[in-house]
Amino acid sequence: MLGRCYVRCGRRAEREKTMKQFQTLLAAVAAATVLATGAALASGGFDEVSLSGAKKLSEFKVVHVAPVQLALGNGGDYRRGGDSARPVDDTVAQIKAVDFQREMLEALYKGKGLSKTPGPGILTISATITKMEPNGRTEEEYKRSPSLSPMSSARVDGDGAAVRIEFSEDGVVIGVVSDDFNRNNRNRPSDKVWDEVDEAFETWAAALADLISAN
Image (tube, rainbow, N blue to C red; front, side, top):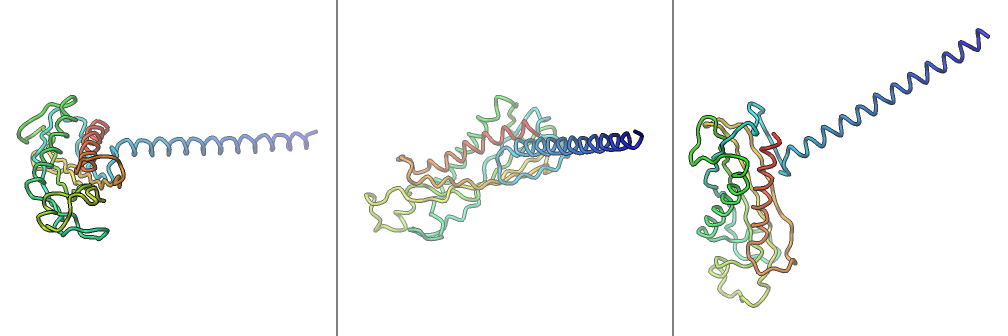
């Protein structure tokens, strides 16, 4: 009888040990899932996010959205399936930069106060557009290639847009995000030359508001 008791007790202890190990494994998986979900939400949907952690973005009550800068490589001639960037007129590029600044202001004003200048206690948002290609031919293309016909293949394949956004307080950088937006929507019915770029601006502005509130 004593021997049987040892066997039964040993088996019971082994089962309890296995159960505890299983519960520990489940807890670890659950924790990993929470962390992964939190990281996905915290990124706001940007490709790359780097925050110093020196100060939470969500703690700022007032933001300053600086004029959007341009660092484009759109100097190439007209391409059909080539690798050179589609040319964009400087004036048009500046207008699109203002469009993006407006999108950011509209996305942020409901949750934050807006300041015209940077300073202590103010989150400064400085965006630089590094790529911006149209889905249709631009005036700049026709200037560079007069032989192009407006009636043939007016809608062409652009390469979307890319941005780098820097967060700072009174000149001290506290975070940087970047994103490359390319939906490849060349077959989407539209007469707009800038529809994919405009979609990128709207997406980034909404993601920016989410990122700030989540961090």
